Amino acid sequence: MKGRGFSRALGATILFKIVIPSAARDLQLKRETHYFVYIMASRSLNLYTGITNNLHRRALEHKRGEIEGFTKRYRIERLVYYETFKYVGNAIAREKQIKAWTRAKRLELIKSANPTWQDLADDWGKLVELQIPRFTTPSRATAARHGDPGFARDDNP
Image (cartoon, rainbow, N blue to C red; front, side):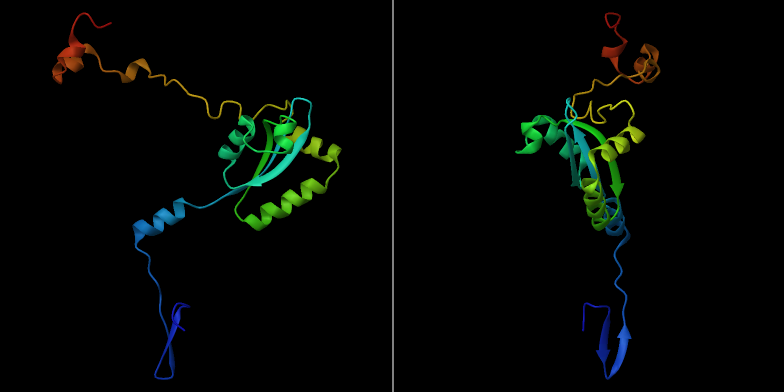
């Protein structure tokens, strides 16, 4: 039964170990998947509970109105709560549990983690202008020493 971790040779069972090269193994470990149970809200406090493996993408889809149905119709575009899970089965069970709760209990859950109902994904997907601290830019003297005549000119601020 090759492929299951053992082989039969001459009536004896020989166990073998599959070794994944370290670079490939490290890449697999870095790509560990997480699952999220999240709650989105509208300005009028309509709630939507869902599950995803990419919270960033899903929140932006809700914000852009790309998901047809309830969330688009009621403009549910504010991420107000989420939980992270390693296993999809646990995330599904938690989503079902939260969906079975009363509205009051879901509101209490959100208030316990996010009392001001701040949109947790408010600045996601927006362009950010990088601020380079002054101390990281080379001085004119340093630029001149390293052969950057354009930087060392007097007409540069």
